[in-house]
Image (cartoon, rainbow, N blue to C red; front, side, top):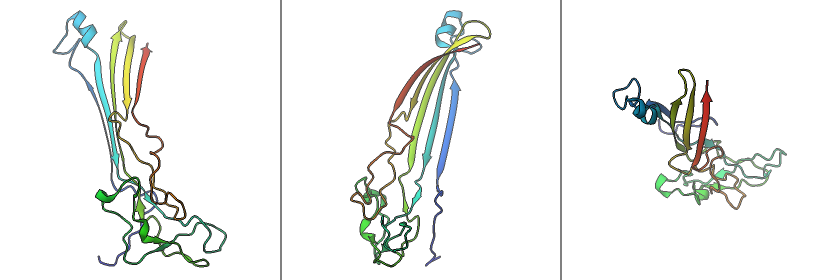
Length: 194
């Protein structure tokens, strides 16, 4: 509907997908292939796993970074510049300029800004984790488990939020990666199950 204003809530993630899978290779005791004793011990008991996470970004509000309304709270929003669009086309976005900073102007001292809340969307999240594990049987109920895990296996950078403080020198820029999603991490472990 033309002229309709849409305001996103702070926890609005429009698209989110999480897929996980675990597959045991058809090798070793009880399977079609490599079912002999020695072959089963070496080739059997392997499992492959993976988790894919993908989501769109999160809504962010732009603030002035100072108490321009002179109300003592310091959470003023700036003004929107008429005729300017805040969002950039995805092909024009970069970490140096995530949104159109020319679409934002500081509100005059003693006034409130007219910019809505949550008008910018942060970068999305994409991560693939991979694991493989092997069971080495010791007895019927006891086995040693070897695990190899790779978090963010594809080493995909997940950029953090852009700076949304209009008085900052880094306004509109992304200067970090998203907390909690590191670049590729590898982990090996042994576990005794009894």
